[in-house]
Length: 149
Image 1 (cartoon, one colour):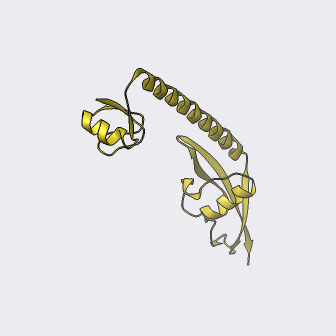
Image 2: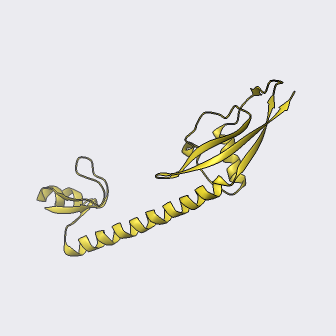
Image 3: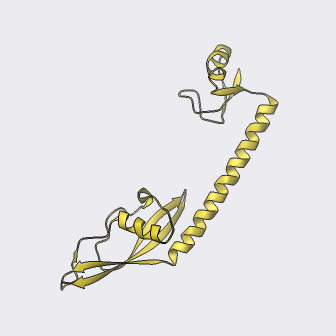
């Protein structure tokens, strides 16, 4: 019997796939627990509609991420750090501090989405890459300004 999976099922398939399983397994387990529906013309039409809707939603999210990447390229965030006479930096700027500065500007990004996870420890401008969406990477400029002690 062919069924359309409504959820991921281990060793059977992923959500939205049409799979062939035994009649008893389909009726007594998958359909009874709401994990799948029988394959019919109507259910295939509904699946096609859902996939089209999902693709449109994905395209919208990617478009928003690209717009955000362009917005981030124009921004530079300044951080004051203590430094010595020869330009040595005492301390660093972490991903958490960068995310906090972005939040002040109204941009919400998870700190785990920052690709360059090493703390910024050199004076001057450093570019930090941020994964905004699948295959959409934005760059944030971080400028460290030293104040000698």
